[in-house]
Image (cartoon, rainbow, N blue to C red):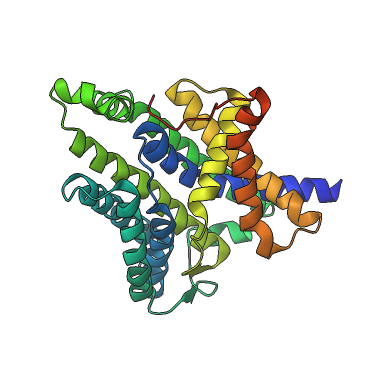
Length: 297
């Protein structure tokens, strides 16, 4: 019973910590239908910025806010490469992700920045009796607030224009909407959420590392696919909720796998296999092409 309780606690805490990544990917992949690979770099960027700010003596919240702003800028840079310079969306994401590797090293000054001896946003929770519950509620509050703001934004005129850009770019362009601006804005918001997640995770685990973002895009996609498969989400609110739920279930599966003896070095392989099965199962089941699509709503 104690083992089961521990697994659930870790899964919920980790799932909510990485749920912001899934929310960010929902905006780029699901809303804009833009395969943005910047995520792997912007996640580390958020952790690198907040770690550097904390080491320099600034307040943790100041570092978090700066991480969000710089993450937004990274997403906008990808959008500008695609819309202004007409670089392929996949290549634009790869280019910015590659550039961010050097940027992150420059920001941190090394490949790993420990934060164990510094004050972070989680320091007040260390004195509490039930630390995991306090941390989980903290992550849950931030995730729910982000979901609420995302849902609210996607129902505004700008948000509806962004959704239409991902669903039918040519149609919405004939109505006078600047789809290039919608793409840049959407990618900025997406990577701002991812950078926020990176900033919080770095403080939670006690260090920022140059390799902490590897495979983040695949993990985020796995979360979205799992959530939407379970909930059959169609509305914006349900899709964002499905991403959060999927993140928790994904972390639960990973935690159980580790408990059963799965080597940590095999996690990325297991995640990739999980996504392949989720995407390919409908075609295998019905004997024809039927893939889960990641287009706009």
